[in-house]
Length: 91
Image 1: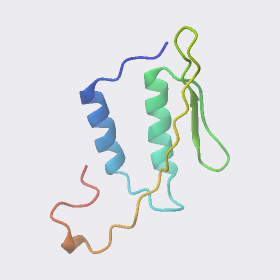
Image 2: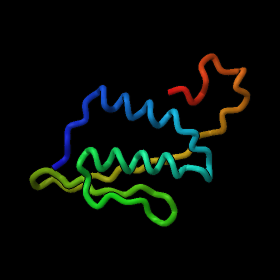
Image 3: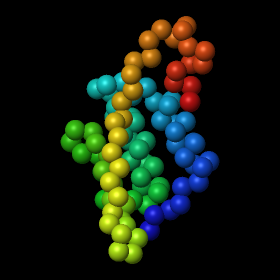
């Protein structure tokens, strides 16, 4: 059974992700954090595949089909830190 995600939990999760510098080719820590969140939410069959995709099954309710979520895990390089008003990975 899936757990309801509160706004505060979603905000915490987003903040956690922002603090992980997941540059292209270095998304492993981001994938691990997403895997942990999927498990905490009650998704089934959660795993990270051989190319780094995070996969989990969120069953549909009643007769509803399951949902598929898809997103990228990497971020664009932050560039010059002195050009940021707030540190880019401060979350």
